Length: 125
Image: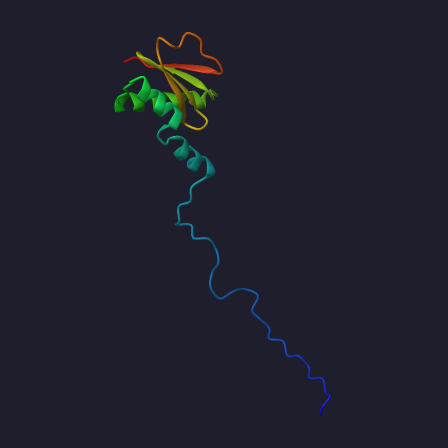
């Protein structure tokens, strides 16, 4: 049995890879702000609770009005409003601008006092 220690032979590798690892400048990337704006422009969601209230009170809102509400919610969010009351001709919606969600809905006659809102959006039909 041989007890010789064989020397290790190290292979030297080139310091720079043979192919370029530089980022491709032709690839378009989105900034965080662009992605955030895209997400914030998504359409409004209606919570289960709000949908139940809309159904119980037979409140009908047209697609055109929903689009206006969506635009105004985005404007309100840009101005720092987080929890607006959206006042329509026949209804009042309480929303979370931060989450782009309608939280609850009530008939306009029920909405004598509305609390926990920090802004108001009035939609004229």
